[in-house]
Amino acid sequence: MGWDLRQALRHYRNPRLARKILEKIREIAKDLEVVKIMHVCGTHEWTITHWGIRALLPENVVVRAGPGCPVCITPASDIDSAIKLALDGVNVLTYGDMSRAKGSRMVSLEDCRAQGGRVGVVYSFMDAVKLARSNPSQEYVFLGAGFETTAPIVAYAVLKGLPENLKIISSHRYVPPAVGLLAESEDLAIDAFINPGHASTISGMKAYKPYFDRVRKPMVFAGFEPLDILLAIYMILKQIKDRNPKMENEYRRAVTWDGNLDAQKNLREVFDFDDGYWRGVAIVPDSAMNFKEKFSKVDARKIYGLASGKGDHFPSNARCAEVIKGLIDPPECPLYMKSCTPATPIGPTMVGVEGTCRIWAQHKVVGIKCRSGVCEIGSQPPRAKRMFEG
Ligand code: SF4
Image (cartoon, rainbow, N blue to C red; front, side):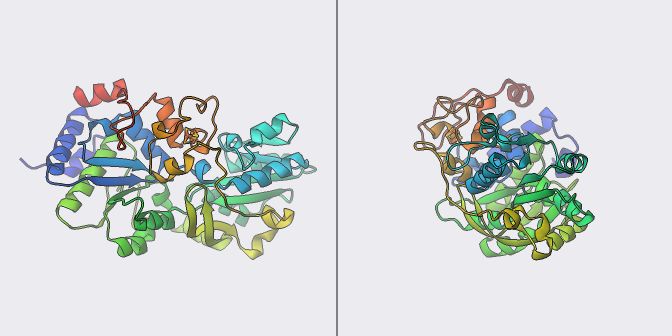
């Protein structure tokens, strides 16, 4: 009997279809060696963990979380710069989870506020614009972190004209070159990628083509429902079995080949795409969105003479860098759920809402088929049991 992928896509949480795709995955995996798949999106990690998908996969299909959390990869030096400004009396605005990430001296913007620093939390960049507009006598700096999902609104607002009293530290990063770097890493030895759904709605699939051409490893663009993830894994395994690596689109309802051309135009008009540091990872070529010279009047780095440095600056024993790179699972860090918890985060991946440690901790995962063999077997979330086992 034929099995129709498109029909499956209509029912993103259908238990019968989920079981059917899982059967297909198990069947195809029998003929394969170990397959290591990486995703680079915190929302993918949330779906995978929330639905207990890892525990359902065959032993030889390993899914690793890569650097898909913007807060996690924001350089410590940018947090340090924002803290310095806040302590000097500038009103620093940022997102809630970003305010809790610690800089190189293990101090966060939230800690700095407790010491008298001027720090405010906003839900979106446009809130920062409104705040600056309604308080023209105050000086504001927005610490902007995020990928091509959040950068376009900043670019758009800059092109429209910001209030004079609002400047920006741009820590925005562009995902495709990072996927290229990860794909070429011999340490990671990743066989295939689930490419990000949200970010690719902006960049389009075409942004990944140069990197795919270099490595010829399967890349499937996927959405965020459990069936999206299962289908992406199935598509990857099929490509590997057929020895036919390609760029495939599982998320046709949102991702296109070209992406959002208006957003891309605005990004390229406002930002240079320079080599930039991803905390815990490396300097990634062409990935840092820095303001072009003609927009230097909004560039807080230039106006306040801030450094754009590097350096991991993680506490001793913390294994954040390995978690961010997908080399280990959170329970392999000795601090996980001991001194480092969502209430007492030490590293950035326990802070960011898209951080792997935080997602695993919130789901009370103590380890799932841990690849190093040192983790305990964790409990599978009950909803996964309901969904996949009927
Ligand atoms: S548990 Fe904490 S210290 Fe360990 S890797 Fe995760 S965030 Fe870093």
